[in-house]
Image 1 (cartoon, one colour):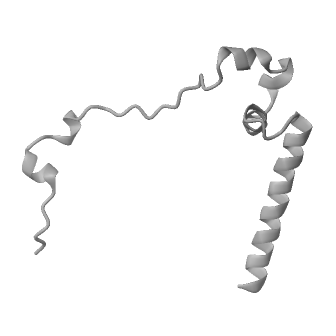
Image 2 (cartoon, rainbow, N blue to C red):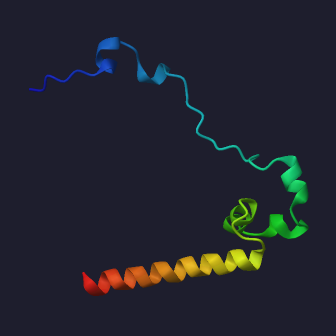
Length: 86
């Protein structure tokens, strides 16, 4: 019925023979110098707080916690408004 032909059908190659794509993220995104500059308690923080501090969005873990709490509160308010008016 359909006149659409895909390249895989015409090429005669098996998809299992294709090379695997590396989808793993590198855990070494922070250089050794940046890691040495971080406080000792930095590695004990949750990943989101580490990310906020690493990208200089938050200066301390307290500021990062406050930002994350504000995001959660804003999301809850948005969901409440959507449910109430829809």
